[in-house]
Amino acid sequence: MYINYHCHTARCGHADVCGDEEYVRRAVDNGFSILGFSDHTPWPYRTAGYAPRGTRMDVAELEGYVRSIRSLQETWGHVIRLYVGLECEYYPDYLPWLRRTVQEQGLDFLILGNHWPLTDETGARGFAGATEPEAVTQYGALTVRGMQTELFRYLAHPDIVFCSYPSFDAACEQASLSICRAAKALDLPLEYNLYGVDKMERGIVRGIGYPLEAFWQIAAAEGCTAIVGLDAHRLTQFDRPTRFDEAKTYLRGLGMRVLDALPGLDAFPKP
Image 1 (cartoon, rainbow, N blue to C red):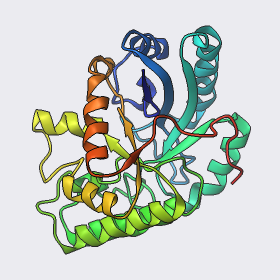
Image 2: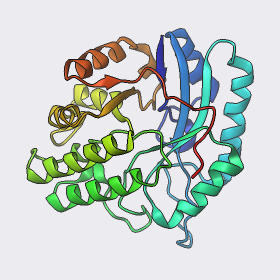
Image 3: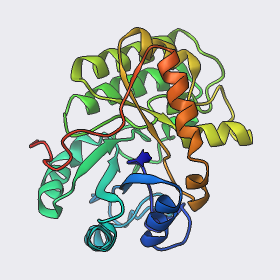
Image 4: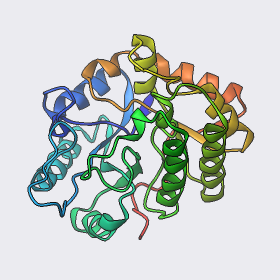
């Protein structure tokens, strides 16, 4: 049986245009026992008129998203365990809103996926497009600060900053060390991201890419714990579940502990 806590929906604007139940059905058909929905979080942007398209749902869609997954829990709970959460950036100005939302919506979990520095309102380049050492250093520092909020169950694609980066240099090594040492200290799992594997296989990354072996060697040396995630944006991503086995074999070969499930999801940690 397979598990995945990283699944997006059509609401984010860059995933398959299909119903939430289609993801559940595809997961069941491919032997998954746990599916966590963690669509890109909406943010209550303060910038007048700012409404990102193709990036994340709107705040007004959040309640319907949660209601949809809760309904699917009732329908499919005898077959698969379903959870509802969000994938969030570290946006300190909006953390009070996020903490309230967790409680008001009764979310099961959050994962940290640090895509932009502090907010995406300013037109700043996303970390997946980083090509300069300063951006890598900033990613490392902000990601550690996000981890230290203790709001998140794990760090998604911790090495996404290398997607467009030309080579593994001193800035990359230092950022990797900072993230991995924080993860170890906080007992926060790091996600080996299979969507990144897809991108590497299709040759659509511009840099050294992710998951990056140099990062995971550091993670193993620092004693970090890993979890494998689909980062599903397409139904077809569920159709090759043996990639989980391959990833686990690779990570365990490095000497890493790999989680088979996230513990304690039935009681969200109080922020």
